[in-house]
Length: 144
Image (tube, rainbow, N blue to C red; front, side, top):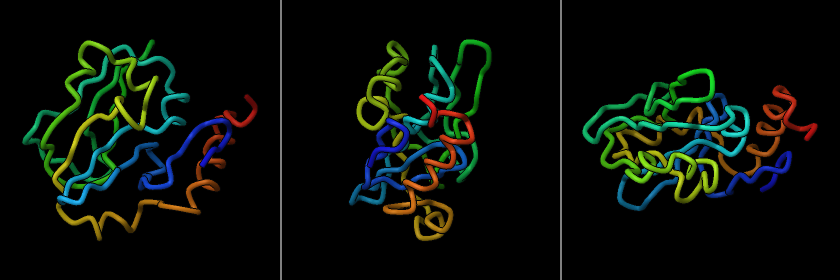
């Protein structure tokens, strides 16, 4: 789906409050990243450092740190679990997050603890468009 000129793939689960997404895999893991709206709101990312494999992450708590032009920001995880791998390409080319936020710009893969519990605060499918449109409006992204 497309909202405010930004793409939001239908198959993803979104933690809209923190502008992050999770793509479920059939093996009990999820790939996580930052939404196109989150990236547009943040501006250019100069550095992206996900937590190390083996790190425990909680839903709504830090899974990565990004450096922006004037600040360092914690990226929140949409799911709970253990980091099993990170996108090592981001160390040399953090702009992948901008160029391909739902593909090559992913942050980490997480072995899920209890996705059914996490699902309660995630949006998926039809409700995503209205929620993202509202967040775009709040940040005046809908006027571009």
